[in-house]
Length: 351
Image 1 (tube, rainbow, N blue to C red):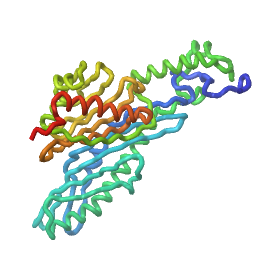
Image 2 (image 1 turned 90 degrees about the vertical axis):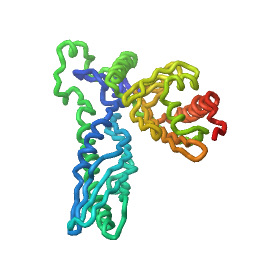
Image 3 (image 1 turned 180 degrees about the vertical axis):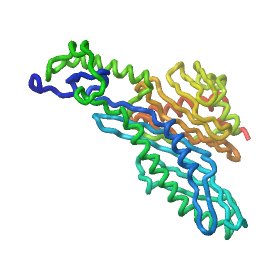
Image 4 (image 1 turned 135 degrees about the vertical axis):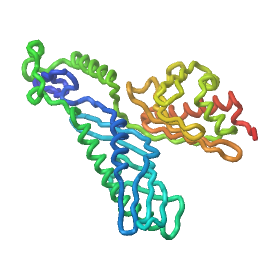
């Protein structure tokens, strides 16, 4: 047990003008996804390379899915990001004899990989002896420039979201403490009892909730594949038609089926919003259980593939709290797949 006046600094309340997150002990999180998307698009559209043979450039960012967050825990900054990127590019020979269009796929832009470790896959639509030279240019100089741009993104992310994440103590704060706050502050080195500190933590947590700040948990990635005996359009409608959703969940469901639209299912126990809707191909959602910590969302990606006798659904869910992994996995099987098959007969062979 600590001596009187020498308590754990987590329980020492410093004179901070905002009275928030004393000693930077609590985990705070800032969403960097919107900034990241804008910055990445800007950087990718600057990619243009040339040599004596020809020139190549990125013409479009066709896919940019994922998320990024900046976190502070115990005064330490931690950055999490994971992106799947697809680019369109074109090339033309210097003499104008040939031109080509192709794609660049970056599947693993994440905090787990340095810029030099990221995969950059270059493909093109029509390959001939001449156009292969343009592909080689894009795979060498183009890929090198893309890596430089990715490093700029990573450096910029850390610089942009380091500001204001670590709060300075009293003697380093630029904000003056009012006379009222000073009058209420305890004497130097006095240990404040846990109950008042807990009340301050509760207030800080509520403030973070209002600012859409979440908590970072130990999470896992969930991948499930399931086949349904129906057309891809029927299955897509099953997840986007409110009446069908109410039917297979056997509960109230509120849905705004549009990008950015909110949804609540199973009488409010599941909620989220639509991030992307590509009819018959893909649905991306921010998704959470009501019981999860406030402001923590997973990302659910449903990929639909039409096969000769069925539709395959591949569900990928990132950000699932590790402690709730099994319940989440079983929930999809018991309340989604089983409910859909029993309600619409998609478990039986229809064609």
